[in-house]
Figure 1 (cartoon, one colour):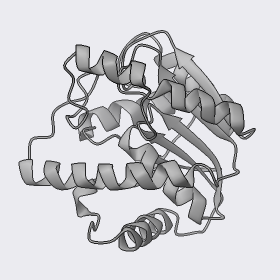
Figure 2: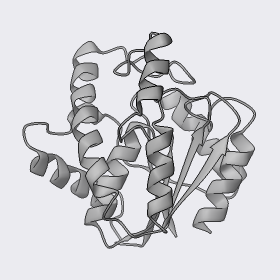
Figure 3: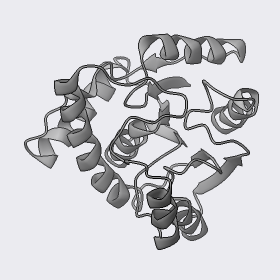
Length: 215
């Protein structure tokens, strides 16, 4: 099975190389789909969806069945692509941020004085180019809404992995989603890191969960 990876908004090349090397340790590889999310069109939702579809197809020129492994903002695009493609066999969402936060979660975020539109402080580096950053954040907001609709329609086996102390994750929403949809399973990690493939002691556990889901 062919693996495609959709990275987080602020994941740089160094972090991507670390993730790729971690996959290789477990006998897996992937093609990275998006280098720069600021390249995506933002004028209309239809143009955005078509651009995502085109990029997925270009990364899979042989038209193979694929697994999508997505992190953070990449989860938005992965869900949108899965709704629209018959080539995607399974989906892994690591630290997805789409969906509504509960009142309790919003209160906790406000008490921690966290800006949800900023690049994540747990295991990711800041996006330096302000123009690209602004456009990428617009893409994030647009795709976040689209993903929340698309996730209700997809039927492929889906694994959601998140850190239980990651404040950016709408955990109540994700738990409700898994309770309602038989194709969605949850796995939580005992850490705060937004990218468990890069930071913390749960890299091996995260890889084992991925391995079990896609092989």
